[in-house]
Image (tube, rainbow, N blue to C red):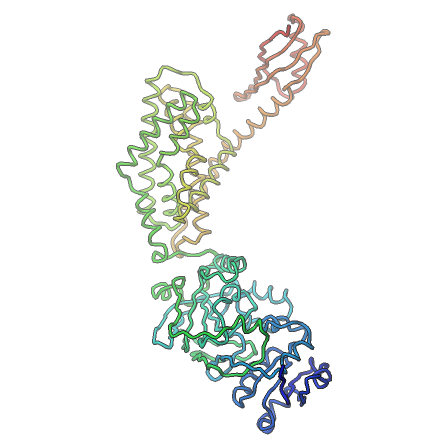
Length: 632
């Protein structure tokens, strides 16, 4: 291995301790050690004696020293100090100072490119605007992790989009809005390295600009999460990220804005970013050169599909981003068109409502879960409810009106078809499937809320839209309507009111949950009134009152049953076993039906004594009905 015959060692106060180590190297390299401040002040007079410099200085000084090396044609080696973890990572070098000294003194320098911005060299990156936790340059003065994190969290609530105009070497002009633009030379540190490391090289002859453009704080958090958990070298850009590579970039902003560099300096926009091919001769490890292969491409890279277009830029530039995303018509045109179509009544909807109701009604009479599930699968009632949720969120009067009309028509058809069939079938006994739908509780509301979230989420993404059928099964909209219709047809108002309350619970629960989900997913409109949403919230509170009492009654019945289930009593020396117990509450009357197992016959006095013992288990009077079976 050949080594430099002479090198200047540029140190600062932190690296002064390794002067003796490098001067006593075993590679026969003569070392001239100079403090960085003296070197920068006297470099012009020293330059004639210098061919190679070895830097061991603070990271913010490196850009300035690289610019000096370019100007005077020095080759460069770098020896990071143990505390400079980021620098070590960028250089793919070890933490062993002796190894790094050996590497820096080798006589095998290779040419690398340099990025110059308005005459200023950048070592790793410069940042315009705000990109908390993504761009390091703006927070480099906060040394501890917690200081940086606290500062970044504060920045979240002050982020705003501003208009940028970026022009490439080939004359392509991009007008967009973003919270920040990061200009990269090369970096392995920070979150950006997780998504751009595959396309970054200090020998590719291009400069890179990354545009960060979140529409809300929530979207920015999702962006950070997607970057953090993205696979290394994944070539798909996360949402809210734009990516441009060219030999030359001109960046201008709509208002007075500065770019901040990793060396602590800054300058006013507009800026011109230029790549200087083979600008510096550099010593680095084999791993460094493996990840920085020589590349040559005449084709620019422009990936801006995730960025705001001109219309959105004019609308949102200069405004602080909200906590939740506000969706524009342009960004989600296909989804909105589909939901508006779903809100309108069509012939297939009418046919499917009638058929699904008839099928559900037959399933209820037959107490067949399989038939009822089949009815749920073909029932079309979920789609206008999801459209209603979006209409309420965005305060779109037409979508609300069309959805409500479609829902009301569907409800009337279902009630009419099921009540007619209920009158035609001479069967008045309540089946188990009917009983399950006439006494709704808060648990049913929770099912509706979860189903509403799932419905809105599945509707928002084409790849999981087929899950909507599963959601319809989970919430079961048509069977409660069919049960209510049967009650209406048979004149059973208690049955009708209970089943219709269950349907209305599902309707309101799905609607409000879908509204909140669409809000979180970023489909809200920025300026529309939210009175309609508040009205649905009020309905939710109103129906929660009877559901709470129904839930409380269910708990009381469960407690009554549990106190007697499989209990043993001894009356006049006779053993009595409670085989089963079913509790009922009708207003203030509590009733329990028992199945008693005995070996000896019970007289009136025995039954009276048993009644007293059972009554002692409850604080309220209980009407007891018993069926006695004898064990032989």
